[in-house]
Length: 238
Image 1 (cartoon, rainbow, N blue to C red):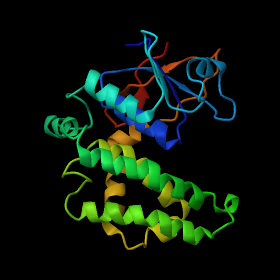
Image 2 (image 1 turned 180 degrees about the vertical axis):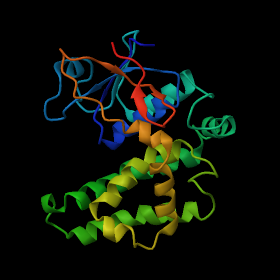
Image 3 (image 1 turned 90 degrees about the vertical axis):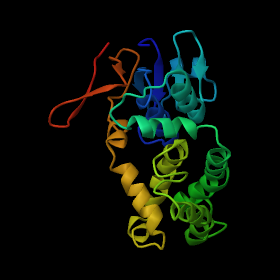
């Protein structure tokens, strides 16, 4: 699968989703880390929308939505033997892929929470209301997650599922707007859940800092080897 290519931007929560899904699969695409303000023509040629992530497969198939990449990787190229989930946890992940609760939570994140998050994060661009007001609108979804997490360690059950992996990059972004406030907010279950996911080996490898890709530069594959001291290194270079 080395001929597959992933166009990515490290800090984009949608690209984080895709990388998480790929790390939990057998797919091993070459990563092209790009600058959003200087998008390469190679990416635009295969995905006119011009946003990351974009996965180009060896059979000329192109997948340009983060959730589609996650589902494709996990259903078409599952990897029950991986560094990050036990066999039972992986089976749970697969079980919850297409459940209505999974769909409902992700839809609420993408279509209700995300627009408020953008206005909260960039409140100066939306002077109609205060940053506090935008935060309060976004908090409705945080409360939904808090309620879910009163029942389980994760959003659907006691191990992580697609809903957790697809949503937490956006909650991480929300937390980083006002970190001092977030750490004292009345959502202890959300805070603990986010900390578990962010401190996991899976997120550590997901956030590996690839060098900026330019057409003349070396491409690096997504998968990594774990050294004895825990250091993460690229598996190979092309």
